[in-house]
Length: 342
Image 1: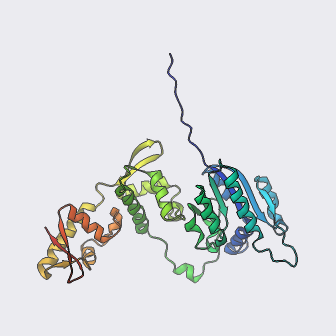
Image 2: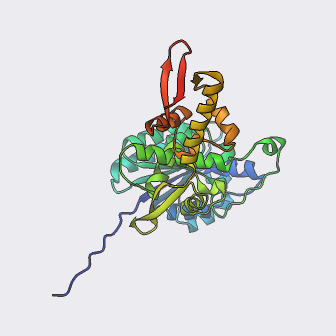
Image 3: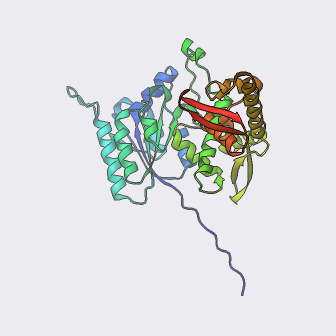
């Protein structure tokens, strides 16, 4: 009898999209000095995440006549919220959109993911309710006009400014020029502390996909594109090349196992710590933990315990003590840990 091959079909996300069009369009216009909202980059980003089964956009469409045709061609259902003369209907679109989203959540079990396109904090309770109903929620908003309350509530938040195909170039202000970008060290620290936490949780080996999900749980706005990488795999390969992590084949193609590099400088840092404690002890007697990190950096200027997956310097020292390199004790008088060479 001929052997048969069984193919396992991966379950894809089924997405319902809800667009607070006025909020998004005005945000784009203000961020770019007059540019129009382009729906295609949003559609492309969602296509990478699953199958969009419903698309609805809410607005008084008499105010956005230039967008009607393009949205209709993109199979977006336009929900009319007219702004009647003499009445205040500021939240009419928000309320209608929230009611429709909850209705879909209850009536269409097959919808697994809700995308809320708005930067308005008024949608935060809706996001919480959808997550209570075991739905994944992705937010989309313009960076400069998105409330700080909304992104942390979501499972993932995409800034429109960062989507592929979007090129918003507002004039640079003095504040923009003085604001430093996140450094490579910050990125390494974020990845390694998250990886360290996953390994300490005892859940076994860590896949790249699991690491990315954990990063998004820490910061729903995390995106490797903010750091100049086209994909998360490219970011991981960069960290592997710099000796921070090691990648190996996982059970699925394209989803490697991630672990700390065996030659990533951790042993050198532990040994240098031991040397520093020994030298300070000879000169000054008992060595307290406060200030020890600064002394260590005199020998290792680029030292950061977060590069090795430790949440803090005390945790790094406890790991060194576990290896038998130093000994930690609590001094009630000093109100601090004391450190000495074993």
